[in-house]
Length: 180
Image 1 (cartoon, rainbow, N blue to C red):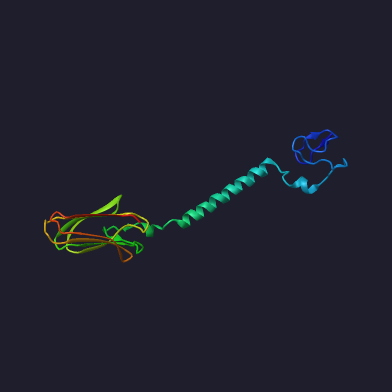
Image 2: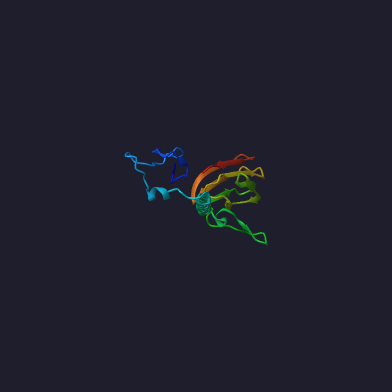
């Protein structure tokens, strides 16, 4: 009987290849091969194999975490911070501005469609919107005083007008939905 150096299976003495793992036991002349390089390739215990696989999984997880964390916007770039006195500290990375130009009183809802800011006012108003560059913007402005003056609404992105509407209707309402 010949014991396979790779898997330890007991083979008949005439076997050229291991019946269990097909390891070459003898050359063409029938001489037994003793190749220490081949014996040591994957001839390791189950515990070592499990440790290697777990090590690869941990390294892949750490690499994924590193890449994910470094590709997400920081909280300063994507959120406003509300202080104790109720004021907003906005990051300069918000590229959108809303310009409402109307001499009378108006009511507006604007911002991210899921989180609209509601505001009443009169006259011209310029607002930096709480929307990052990749977000959608929704604007809804309506006259409140039934005047025939022109209501003009502009959406600016990095200083350039990307959407503009106006109306002179006494019940004038302007709706702008902008998708990046």
